[in-house]
Image 1 (cartoon, one colour):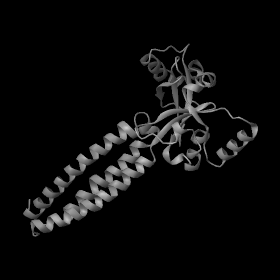
Image 2 (cartoon, one colour; image 1 turned 90 degrees about the vertical axis):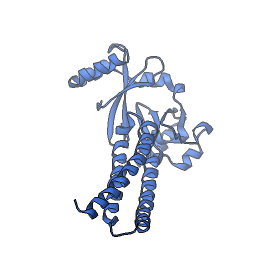
Image 3 (tube, one colour; image 1 turned 180 degrees about the vertical axis):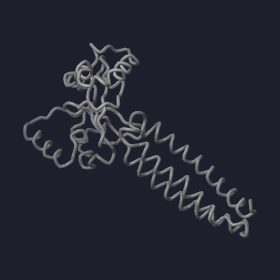
Image 4 (cartoon, helix red, strand yellow; image 1 turned 45 degrees about the vertical axis):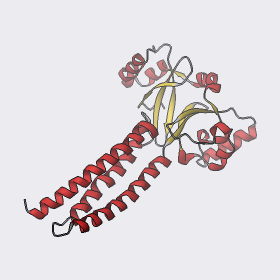
Length: 253
């Protein structure tokens, strides 16, 4: 291998290894904090990470390969690679911030389903009108909330019209209450898993395996649909507190 080419590979591989270490840290934040299972799929965390990773792990080392000529002095190389690293860091910071802004913040019970609410879905004006405990969006992973019952027909109409214009009911921070306070309503809205088995017989092995993993039987278990952007999944609920204990990539509608 020519000396110049070997020199370029050396610098490019070094750049790649440093970039990979940084991506490992960012990936840990994305997959274990901002987008824990199942949100890495439900909320697109995996695809967002892959987009950021491709930019970080490909473009930076490729640019370094292009400028790392053996004819340059060490000072020139450090300056050139440093400038590439600064641009790369700026792009990476923007990408990480975008992923953070798109993160799921709540799993909200709304009428007859669970909705994944993302930070970008929440109107700051409605957030300011919510109760104090909900005025700050979670940073360390999504938390369960519930939408309270409507207090009047006029409120119901206003919320319904807003939903038709794209403001999902579950994302209405001014309607949020604690999930546990609506446990009875959640149980009432949930459906028997036996009905899901009847409507989705091809999914029976996956459903039964999920029930076994959480120690439930089909006769006693209940579920709710989970909606998130363009996906619909199924959440198996705990008989004790009506919280989801297992998510299945099955469209229940």
